[in-house]
Amino acid sequence: MLEIVVEGTVGAGKTTLVEILEKERGMKGFYEMGDELADQILERYYKDKHRWCLTMELYFLHKRFLQVREASQTDRAVMDRSMTGDFVFVKMQKQFGFLQPIEYSVYENFYKTMVQILPLPKLLVYIKCSVETALRRIEKRGRVYEVSVERSYWEQLNYYYDMTFLDGSNHNILVVDGDQIDFVENDSHRALVLNAIDRCMNSNGIYILDETGLRYQVNWYNNNA
Image 1 (cartoon, rainbow, N blue to C red):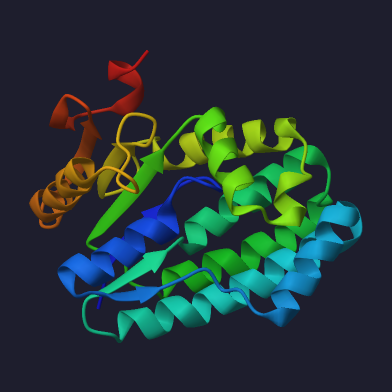
Image 2: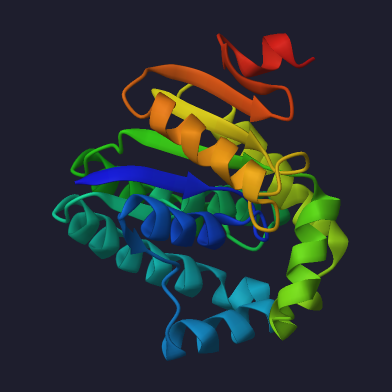
């Protein structure tokens, strides 16, 4: 079954954490759905967002649905991004005007139908990091269509991610402070994250992991004003 979904803005480290869970916990990873057609659509989208936005989002929605369904039938699955994460982009696209209201409604109807028939993971891991941290990682991996994107786009994306995953609606979520916890380069931090995931797997609520350790939190916004 789908046990863990890893979420976070572009550059947060989702793929790396899924790879770590595969290696250290013997899980089966399901990754970002890159293929030749997806790359072609993305390149066109970044050049003309109004024209290609709905095409891109519906393409990824369908692929994500099939991926979640497969992961749900796989023993000990962990996924890099969810349908909810995809919907974050769609909300932002509407705000920017890249999606017309009627286009947004078309997507939303498909999304609501699909999520109703898919199971929830045991744990959502949300890697929360600043725009500065995300941009450093984006520049390091050097994807042309990402590096050329204006900073304001990434700032808005970060905002929408936080609003979506820190609103208290997720039944079981571990928030990892991606600015303080470097599980990519720091072995001790990697061990902290793995231990926190083990402890949170069969719990229920909001958990925060930063340099002070793991703690339970009733509501993110009330305690982090």
